[in-house]
Image 1: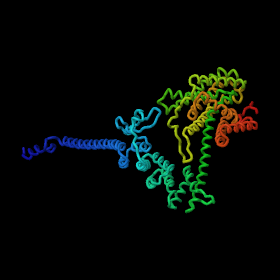
Image 2 (image 1 turned 135 degrees about the horizontal axis):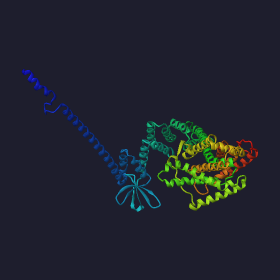
Image 3 (image 1 turned 90 degrees about the horizontal axis):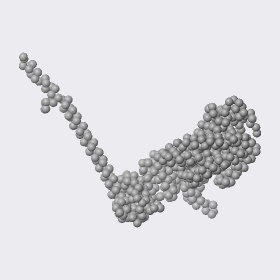
Image 4 (image 1 turned 30 degrees about the horizontal axis):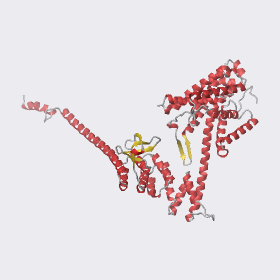
Length: 574
């Protein structure tokens, strides 16, 4: 065999082997990759460790500085306040606000820094570091952290700076509103800087107002003119007050602020703000009138069905509302962890409870009194007294119904107008109920039979419609809707045995005024009476306003006995 061939055979295996250790190249690459991965993992671990150490050191800095703030003398507090503010910790605002309000303490037993709030039992403590509530102690167990005027002024500046630069836009907006209510000239540069950096248009307008409240006191006439223009475009009562002050005249009829025509400009600006606020007041009254009309609509819509179809004067209708409200309370007691969904659950439950009670009343009492309206009035009045006493037997006081968070609060349109969420939802709910009821009456068999019995009962009976069962289901439907009205009313009024009595008279007025049994008439009558009541109350008072409305309805019925929208039928007569 040639020597070259031998060498080639001997050398060939070395092309696939590692010279150093005789391992395959793939194994060597795997080792290298494993080593690289290990290095990456070590780096990640080091970074995480450093991050944890930083967080721990950061928390330690806050704990140390907060304790030092509580223990230091007046001369050192300003320096410690700056150091705390530089930490960019959310707890910093809490401790600063507690300090300036006089609620920061040291617990004598272990020298823990706590926030204390007065209560009937003593002082309720909250840990500054964790934010967790602690025990209630006597004031002797605490040492109050005191400050002087110098520290107080420093705190005001730092708190304003932290709030104006906060990440949360609501905090920045509230800070600007606080500065509008109490202008601080020494914070002018701070407000101007925050205004330039602000990106939210709504917050920026509030900051512009706060800046104008400071600039109007300036000696620079140009700044004062610009401030007046900004204040004159607002809806704020604070802006109106300061414009009226600068627009005052002396005994001779001259403006006190004559320099640069400031007095005249301020007076004209005050007039514009006043007119704008009157418009907002009108809109607010209109909103409250519509919300009251929605309440009346919910209370009267069931009565319009029962009174319109059967001609029954149901004086127990208010108690159906009361049962619906108590059903809401019962749902919240049965499901205490589902408060946010309790109203949604209570709506069908209240409909079933009040509806079943209504059917029971109709089957046992009302069915024997058809054609005798005065006797149905007396009978249902007795039933209302019985139901009130039954509820009073088990609970004589008003019961607390919790409003879910999504129904709490208000939507701030501007400085002069805010719309409460609970009334907004009631308006939407009443319109939804009215729409669903209209669909039921026009698109279902029950609705067709109800309309047939309303227009001509004898003909409906001859066509095979069981009017007795239609009456029972109609009475149950009207009572069930009253129960749903009670769910809505539980969010804006007290829930008690007598709550339904406040709506029964108004409900009858709505039904008679709108046209007996007519849903469209009920809607317009409820909205009209609600709006008129709200606009009359500021001038005539609540009681006298209702008297005026009642007199108007009496006169209207004399002119149009069948109401705004009268039902049509072969046997319907004036």
